[in-house]
Amino acid sequence: MSVKMNDEDIIKRFHTVVGYGRVIKRKPYLHHDPMWEWRLTRTNDILKLSKKFLPFMGLRRTKQILTATKGKVPVKKRQVLKIVPECGYMKPDEISNRGAHKHVRVGEKPCPTCAENQHKYLRQWRKAFFEANK
Image (cartoon, rainbow, N blue to C red; front, side, top):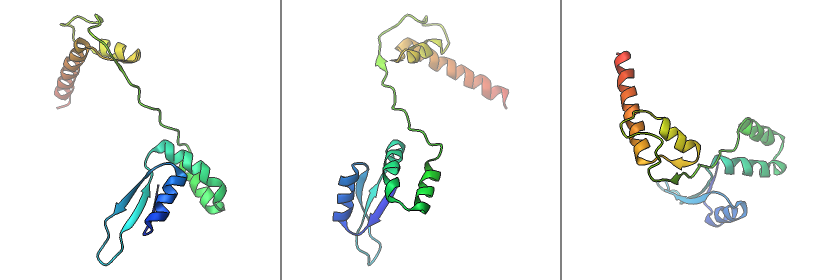
């Protein structure tokens, strides 16, 4: 979602009123004035703002906004994983991704042993996959 125009003060005021997005200065073409642009790229912010704009739009624009946002759901925030030392879920010589999955399920970053075992498992799986699909 974006708004572009030559008036820097209008774009900055729009950004202040809306409270979302960012303002950037666009490089002008030859013999043109500099262009200012307010841009919004996050899905959650676009959905919130489009709902706020609905009362101010006419019928045609309201239908367009509703069509564009139909079926869109807010994106969940990324989960921040806790860092843990060695866990003992797996033995160092075991090749599996089981330990890494256990860590992620409980909201932890895989310990070094589980991460290494998952890496070995995926490498082995890829090798078998590509050999089977030659």
